[in-house]
Length: 115
Ligand code: 5GP
Ligand code: ZN
Image (cartoon, rainbow, N blue to C red; front, top):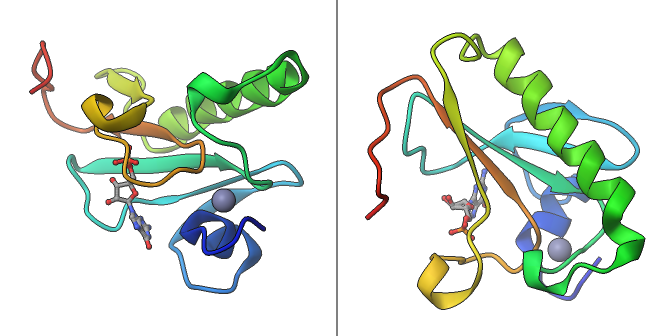
C-alpha cells in the first residue's frame, strides 16, 4: 500500500469499487466516471507507478495485465465491435491517479486523435 493511494485502497478492499475481476496480481473495476458504455480499469494489486517507471522486473506483470484486459473486453462483449486500451502518463497524458492502470474503453465509436 502506497500512502494515500486510492487504487491501493480499492485493491485492498478498504474503499469500495465495482470490482469485476481479481486474482493474486491484478484487480479490475469499473471507472467511477465512465467515458464510454464500458470503461474498466485494470490495475496491479501492488502499487506500481505509471508506465514511465516500469523496470524489467515488471515485464511479467504487464503481460498479465494486458491479457486480463483482453479477457475483460471479451467478457464485456466489446471484442467484436472493438475497443481502446489506454495508459495515461503524466500531466499532458491526463494521468490523475499515480498507480498504474489500464483503461479499457468501448461500447461506442471512439474518435481519433484523442482530445
Ligand atoms: P487517469 O486519469 O489517471 O488516467 O485515470 C484515473 C481514472 O480513475 C479516471 O478515469 C477516474 O474517473 C477514475 N477514478 C478516480 N477515482 C476513482 C475511484 O475512487 N473509483 C473508481 N472506480 N474510479 C476512480
Ligand atoms: Zn497504489
